[in-house]
Image (cartoon, rainbow, N blue to C red; front, top):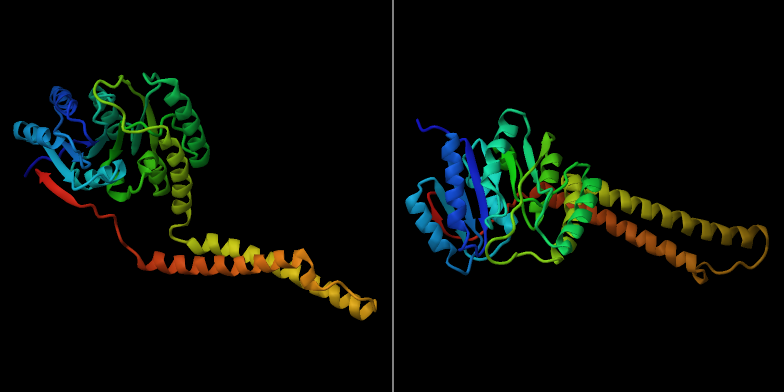
Length: 322
C-alpha cells in the first residue's frame, strides 16, 4: 500500500515560463531535505507562452509533479479549486509561481497545521518589496476585510497559505473569491485560522498579472461573498425581511393617508386634499410594489437554492499524472 502524501504543493500559473522550473527545483530541495512525501500540483490557467511544454519536461524528470491545463484562462480561483480537487496530501500548501513566495516557509507552515492544530495558516508578507501604489491600497483593503469578516489576518491576498485536506475538499472557490478563502473557510465551520510572517521576494521575472483594479473587484467580491455565505441557504430571510418591511411601511403610510381623508370628510365636514394628489402616496405605493417584488425574489431564490446543486466545470485540455 502506497504511503499517503504529507504535502500537496498547489501552484496556479499563467504565463510563467521563466520561473516555473526554478520554483519546482526549489520546492523539491526543501521537501527532500525534510523527508516529506509530497506532490506538486500545477494548474496552467490557459497560458499562451511555453509554460505547458516546460511543465511537461519538469514532470518527465520529477514524478511528483502533476499538472492540469485549462482550455482557456479562467482565473486564479478556478485554478485553485481544480487543484484542491486533485490534491492528495494531508496538508495543502498554495503558492504563486512568480518566485515571490519562498518554499523555505513550507516546513513551518506544515508544522502549524499538523502540530499546532490550525486548519488554515495564512502568510503575512510584513516586509514587502512592492511600490507604494500597491502597498497602501493593500493595507486599506486588508483593514476593511478584517472588519467585515472578523478574521484577524494582515494579508488576505497572500498566495502562500497552508490548509488541512478536509478544508480544501469542503469548500468551493469560484469567480474571484480566492482572496477570501479564509472567510469562506470560517463560514463553513473551519475556525482555527492562524497567521505566520513569511518572506517576500521582489518579482524576478516578467510582470504582475494584476493591476489596481483588483482592489475594486476585491471589494465587490467581499460584499458578494459576505452576502452569499450568510444567505445562500436561506435567501428568503434576507429578501423576505426587506420585502416585508417595505410592504409594511407602504401599507401604513397609504392607510394613514386614506384614513386622514375619510376623517376630514366625514367628521370635520371639510374637503380634504385628494390622496393621489399627495407625493407621499406615491412613495407608499412604490414601497408596496418593491415589498412584493422583494418577497417574490426571495421565494424564487429559495426555490433555486433548494433545487440547484450545480458546481463550476472548467474545460480541461490536458493532464499529467492525474
